[in-house]
Image (cartoon, rainbow, N blue to C red; front, side):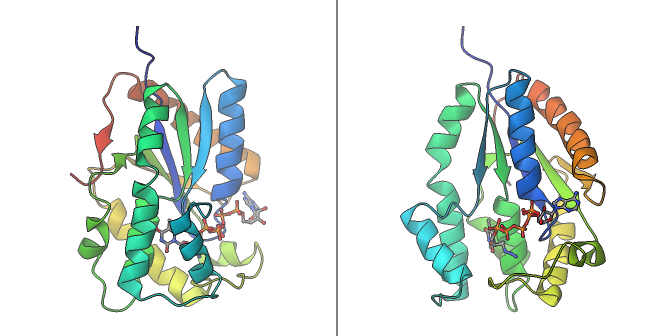
Length: 212
Ligand code: Z5A
């Protein structure tokens, strides 16, 4: 009999919301409970495309805004065969940022519509759930100063948050808001519960296509 497919679980949220911390904790907790699970993150800076993106984020290179948007998208598409293979084999993928970051960040730049920014990601594997880690700008600021990378400033992050809110109005995506202001353990408990629901639901549903 074919293995039940794994779930595609995406964590999104503003800077310093705790996405990376929570992805790692979730994968560990799932594995300890006997669910095959792996973490992925976007951008995946290890690939040839990812290295171009990384140099751009580190301000070591300049790229035209449409071009870098399409590179972020290509960086997701290049991972699709591997993602599908793992999901079909029954592995749950816990993904740190996805197409929603792509659309929110580029559309926060002048002259970009949300509609244009979603197009290059139409048809990607559709997450079974997108957990949006909600944190106010003041609470994010209390977690330390922004770093040196591109986009790490308060005004731009506030524009990004507005775009995320618009994306969350789309009921074709299974958004779940998580209050990320609690302790690491409390946030984890909420995420683990919501993720188990998604894992169980995914076992009886085919993998969808995003924004189609
Ligand atoms: N980007 C884009 O433009 N287009 C795209 O398509 C994609 C991304 C996919 C790089 O992303 C940039 O690329 C990003 C979006 C853009 N730009 N920005 N800004 P990244 O994933 O490499 O971003 P990051 O900078 O590594 O992650 P982050 O957002 O800054 O952090 P986080 O993952 O949400 O949080 P964290 O690293 O887990 O935790 C941050 C700190 O808070 C750390 O000190 C923790 O110990 C602390 N923390 C975590 N949880 C808690 C709780 N609950 N309480 C207190 N303190 C906590």
